[in-house]
Length: 478
Image (cartoon, rainbow, N blue to C red; front, side):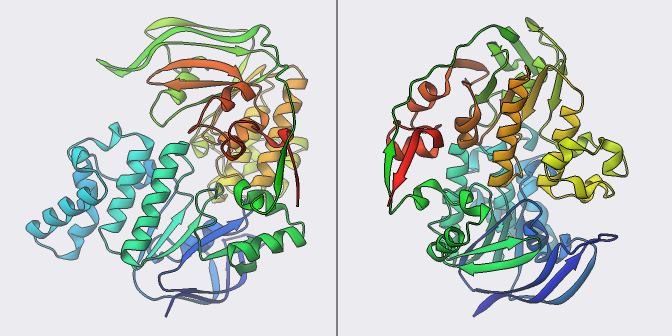
C-alpha cells in the first residue's frame, strides 16, 4: 500500500521566478524508510513541509499530493518547535486537543516518557535541556500523536556526533517497532544511507532519481554528480581497497590572535556554564572547537566575541572580530537580501547571487546560512568566529566554504569555528580543541587530535583505525 503519492507536483513561492518543486512524481510504500538528498535549495524542505498540511508553505501548487494517514513533522530547530515551558506540558500539548480525558493523557505521557527515556526530565524546564534532549522531547511529542508517516527535516543538524547517532538509532527503532513510514532529509547521511530503502535525489526542484542506496551510488558515480561526496565514506569505499599515505604533522602553532584565560561564566547563580576555561586561537590558522551539546562551546564563542562578559577571567584579542551565530535569521532585519549585504564576488562564490531580491526569511536553510556568512565576511574583520558554519550546507558547498576559509587565512585572517561536523573539521582545520563540561581539555594539530579519539573523530579515522583523518591521507583502488 502506498503511504505517500506525488504526481507531477510543482510548487512556487510568492513572487518567485522559479519553481521550488518542478514536476515531482513519487510513490512511497507504507512502512518504508526513505532518505531525501540534494544540494542546498534543491527543494528538500519544501517537499517535506508540503506533506504536513498545517505547516505547508504559502505559494502556488499544482499536480497531486496524497498521504494515506496522519503526518508527524520534525524540523531541525528544536528551539523553534518547543512551545511549552516544561517537558510534561510539551508532551501534553498536542494530545490535549484530541478529546482525551486527563487520565488518558497522563497514561500516554507516562508511556511515552518511558519509551523515550524521559522520565527523569518530565518536570524539567525545556529551556534547561541540552540540544539533544530538546530534539528528543520534540520527537516524543510528535509520536504522542501516533502518526502514520514521520517526516524529518535535517533533525540532526544541531546535534553533536554521539547525540546524532543516538537520535538516528531511535528513529530506526521507531520505524522497526511501529512499521511507520519515514521520509527524512539529512546532509550528513553516514548513519542512514545503508539502512534506507530508497534514496530520493532532488536537483533544482526536479527529482533526478529514486532508487536503492547501491543504485543511487552507481548513478552518482556514472554521471559524476557532485552529490557523490554526500554518500558516506564507508559506503563509497566498501568495494575498494584504501591506501593510507604516510603524512607527518607539520603545522606550527605560532602566536595567538585571540586568548581566553581562565574564564568563568554563568547564566544564573550556582550554575556555571564555563569553568576555568582557557583557549589560545592561533593567528593565521583555522582553529576549531568540538564537544557535546551543552558543554559551553557557543557560550565560549560569545565571550570571545565580546557579546558576553565573564565574571572572572580575561579575553584578549589582537584585531577586529566578526561573528556568525547559529541562529542566522536573527541577523536579518531588511526586506531584501540585497539590503543585508553587498552582492558581488563573495555572494557569487557562495552561489547566492540569484537571491538578491528575495526576502531573507523566504530562503532555504543553506541559503540563509550563506547570506549570513557573506554578511560576516563583509566586515573585513581580522578574526572570524563561526558557530556551526556548515549547518544547512550540502557537500559541495562545504568544500567551497573550506576553500574560502583557507583563502582567508592565507590573506592573514584568523578563523575560529565551533562545529559538530567532524569530517569538515578534519578536512579543513589546522588545530582542534575538545571542550567538556565548560572547559577546554586539550588542543592539538588535527591529525594527532583525531587519531587519538574513537567517538568524536572523522569517518576516515574510524574506518582506518586512526591511520587517516582526511581525504589528503588516502588513495584507493578497485
